[in-house]
Length: 57
Image 1 (cartoon, rainbow, N blue to C red):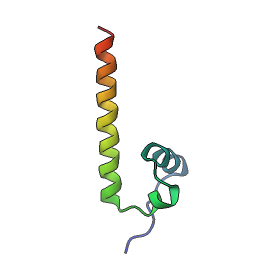
Image 2: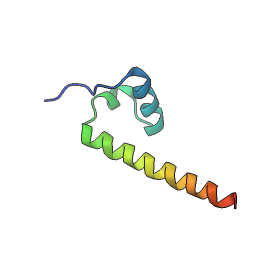
Image 3: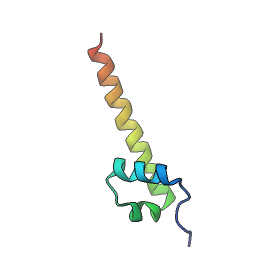
């Protein structure tokens, strides 16, 4: 069994807030699940940035 994720406290707090997951759950989340959730956040952020860019034209 693996131990807690090795994240800096600042990164862990930011991810916890962004994902809406309690910090304790985040630290024991399987790495592949966390990576999937981070990818979903990146996709969502890119879509929001793209839609903001369209309004500037």
